[in-house]
Image (cartoon, rainbow, N blue to C red; front, side, top):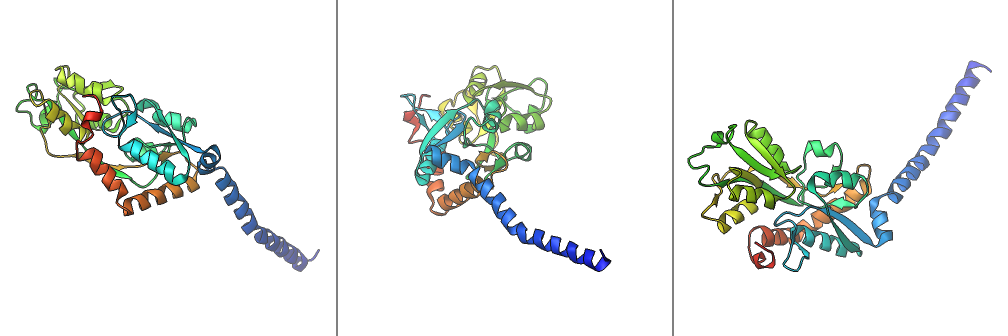
Length: 276
């Protein structure tokens, strides 16, 4: 075969291959779409949402039923998808592994978007924003500056695996850090005088200080590491990311997300629904 014929044969092969690329790309796109958790949810008729219990994101009311901002978000999301909703309470330190393992379809649990978490899961755009403040035992920390909390003589309490635990360790590396499964246990340690302080997302610290004015206080007005919270989903699912992002955008544009967030975070009309 002459060089010219070889060149023509090669060009023809490339041409045939190139012609098949759009079809191949379409097949890959269709496969990804079919494998999306969105399709699983539609076929199942139920969206499974992982969450951890912490006020006022998600709580148990006096009858033991789940209530809170996340519950409103999850129920509205399911309604708009035309499916039922199943909430799966999960300990915070195991919630990401549980998502990756397929125990539920998404995490909607006030999870702050961080690069470290993004190594394991993907996040939607934020659906809420919050900042953290210090909740202190007033008598034990009287006269403390922020720098005084960074001492080996100071003990913090925090929820295991949550963002405040990470921030406390970074901001106050000399302090002792006690870890618990729930924010309530951390607060109780401060109330009992077993810890000088804890750190939580607002409005929980301010609510606790108002409920226990003789013991607890929020000593600094500064909110630390204010950032956005997103839904977490398994990696490799662009359809789910696109749908959840569009739902968050639409819910924000109508004012629904703000109205629900203000109800749970800026008011206390719901306080009688849950145990103190």
